[in-house]
Amino acid sequence: LISLISLNLAVAQFNETIRTGRPGQAIGAFTVGTGVFQLQSGFDYFGNKNSANDARQKGFLNNTVFRYGLTEPFEISALIEYKTERTSQGNNESDQKGLRAFDVGIRYNIYSGKGLVPNVGFQIRMRLPILADAYPINNMAPRFIIATSQQLSNTFNLITNFGAAWNGFDSKPLGTYVVNLSFPFNDRLGSFVEAFGTFGGGNLFMNFDSGLAWLITSNLQLDIYGGYGNNYRINDYFVSTGVSWRTKKNKS
Figure (cartoon, rainbow, N blue to C red):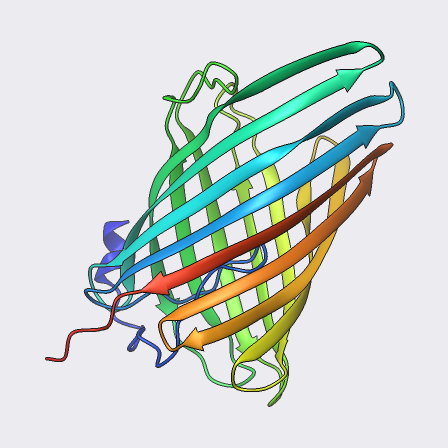
C-alpha cells in the first residue's frame, strides 16, 4: 500500500460530472478527487429459485457506499449493506434480516490512460466480522479488484474488473469478474450492458444486467437497472434503483 501511495503516475481525478459505481456491478479506475465526499446508495428487490429442491428466496437489500478523496489519486471508502429475506421450501418458511456487510477500504488510481490506452485502478476492502447473526463471518474477509476503463470510441466505454474475495471462514478465495460496456444516449441519459460473476473450485457463475443512469446535475445522478442469472439450476433476478451524490470540489 505504501508503494502504491508513493507512485506519482496518476493525474487529476476530479471530473466535471459525477463518476460513480452505480448503476451496475463494475467500479471505475478513478477516485473522487481531493476533498470530495461521495455517497452511492441503492435499494434492491431480489428473488431466486433452486429447481433442484424447489427452494425459493425473495427480499430487499440496501447497499450504501461512502467515498472520500484524501488526494487526487487516493480515496478511502466504506460499504454498508442491510438485507431482509424470506426463504420457503414446501410448507416451510423462514425469515432473516440484518447487517450483511460492513467493509472499509481504499482505492488508488495507478495510471491514467487516454483513448484505447486504459486507465488502471486498484481497490481493496476488508469485510469486518461485526455482522448480524443471520450473516456471520468468523474472520476479516478481504476483497480486491483491479479495475480498467477505456474509451473505445466516441460512443462506447469499456470497464473491466478482475479480483478475488474471501468469505471470512477459510483461506480459499473466489475469483470475481465484471465486463461492462456503457454508452450515452445524450448528455444526461446513459445506459450499459454487463456480464459479471465468480469462479473457483471448478465452477463458473455468470449473470447479466442492464439499466439506465440519469444525470440530474453534475453532482447528482439517479439510476435504475435489473439483472438475471441461471447457474447450476438456480435462477435469480433483481431490480435496483438508486442515487449517487457528491459534494462540490473546493476551489484552491
